[in-house]
Length: 378
Image (cartoon, rainbow, N blue to C red; front, side, top):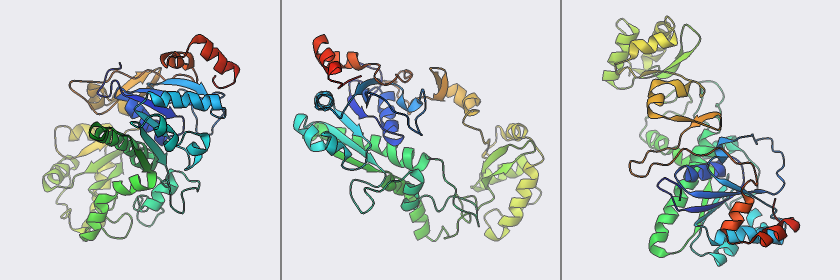
């Protein structure tokens, strides 16, 4: 059994892209035994990358689900599993013969996790889309950006990963908890639109309270406030400033050497204040300014690239990043004091563990050979 709080949990992952693999990565990171069902003959994909960290920490079995024998292999895996996760468009798993009804007929305790952009139903359920489309519909994209400029895509962090994979992992764990009392599995329908919308909950509260305007880049947390923004330093790098509270603002004023600045919460003074801060920041290099702020509550920190972040003293002290198979990447999170997870192993090539997984299922060498002959497995 793997180390971690989810040690002993068995998960079947029908291979997909981005959000569903991220959910499975989280479960594997925390100790679940995740078997990834890859295609028997993997094809090229524009978003596929070698040694993808999202595929770390689990075994891979190559299966041809277009054959009855291949479908049966997946069903046998599901019979012994706690969770099955798929990330196809609605109806695809059913057409494969691997929909919830079929799987639950084999294993009524299984939690069936489904990851889509729009959800399992609704007028857009069958439409194509990507993260930018889902967060746009959710209301999570429009507020992000500078005043007078177009909304800025927040990478694919809000839809794919925050609103998608992370919500799916949470939903699966919630269903597993409910199973402890009911003894039954259920379907978890996670959509990136709904997850991204959930992430905007506080904005709806601020808007209702009259504390959020309808203009992008005009508010406290969207770069409108000069004391909550990023600024370029003398060496062309950036620092992040988040000195909202009076005490923190007072420390920032000292660090930057601002002489008699206007009240920072007076919105009418924001243009003037922004100019003062920009001029003060621009006199220093990033690292020099960060050093000046060290030991204060000025809420001034460096803006690091993902590739710089692992070297920051805080991240280094906490082991926030690890080297897995020659690729530096984020370590499993969060932390557990009694059941810490082990460092994940590097991604396995598609189909690498086919024989081992089938042997664990109880299939004989002759059974495995027959499946290969039938073209059902890699």
